[in-house]
Length: 538
Image (cartoon, rainbow, N blue to C red; front, side):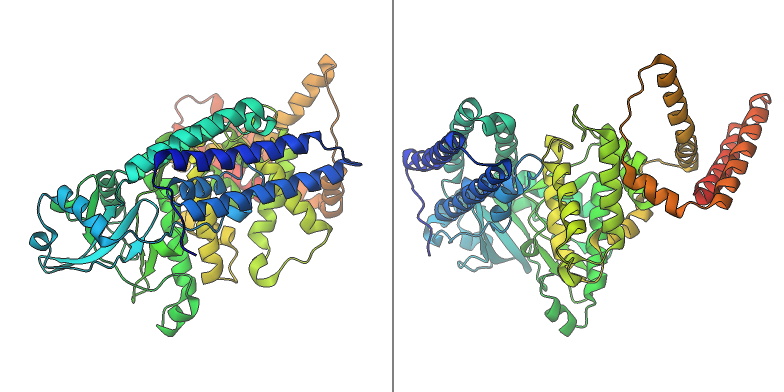
């Protein structure tokens, strides 16, 4: 079915406001209903969210333009929106019917300053791809096969109209509905506006593309098209045409003699580098924006939606990844806190337990898509823990990283098709190891980290004694981990651990009275002894 797109600004605004007003009305009606039990209310509310997600998806497909971006954007905000709402939006693709060449040509020639036939040796007027903001055409320029990306005619005005309408709808919902206040819709609107306006600047996209190419200059497994700078403008981007096999076509890769698992590893490795080292990452890596070359290398396309990781946060992401690899729950929670992922109301002990369960399952269990986790109490508990993470006031996703979560989810989906027998998190852990030291984390920092882990039980014991002394100790006991520990305890290992800690304490005391001993030697001894402590602890 061909989408109908209102061309007049007021019609588009009316369509958006009608969609938002309907959602607000249905929410108000729901608030008036009475339910026999809380469970019945929860089921009805989940169904309401699901139906609203379906309505938004259908409207986005029908209207196109910014609403497609709205749906994609909200699908990435599982931290603040219910999964029943975001799930229908997850498959929303930015693919719309193409605008006729006769409408595109005048704007392209105005941007280039001369007729298309005088610039290009050949130009295919049938678009190679059509999205909500731009269309892409094949052409030849000075013997070079190129792809020409052009903004759709009138898209700037359409986006501004839609943004104003969405802002009004978000403002109404924030004032009149409980869920609007809870999800801080005005902040979400500001994020959406920033990302969308960034995508309308194709010259800025060219700069991000060139930066990405520079980051992977020495890596033969990761590629990106070159930019034809002399033809690139704010409304036009000319770059090398790239071809290959889509990464989700596993059978075609096998037929071409390409190992899909190797492609999956390249994809994961390239993203670990983007997140942990470069600070610039591709935020929309769906299969339509990726090609696999005949030699097995991966080519990235479409750099309109990119994300940034701040330099100070990359170190914390490395610390978080290192803690995941070691299954160090205290380290994970501390890194999440420094990254501002914890809410003021977060229950740290409960979070640590949930993190430990989740990471252990993801690192050790077979991929659910391939082997299937049978329905049962354990799976139900895991799902509850994950949802508790993202939606029930335990973790919050800082606005600046909304699209990092989106890219992580998309890459995970692609990898699941390429390597169905490889758990995604385990692949991430393997590929991340090579980058854990690239932000300046050296052996001293590693030693300090190990030392902190070894001394953590002592600090906790002292804290408990202090609370006992002051009379402020409160008990919050979870018996399940205690029972597990008692069943698996090995007295011999505990004896070895205590002996090593005692020796470590003596050496620290000795070093503290020898000021001429080099600090490097001190930290080396601390690292070795603490590592032994960690390895032999029960």
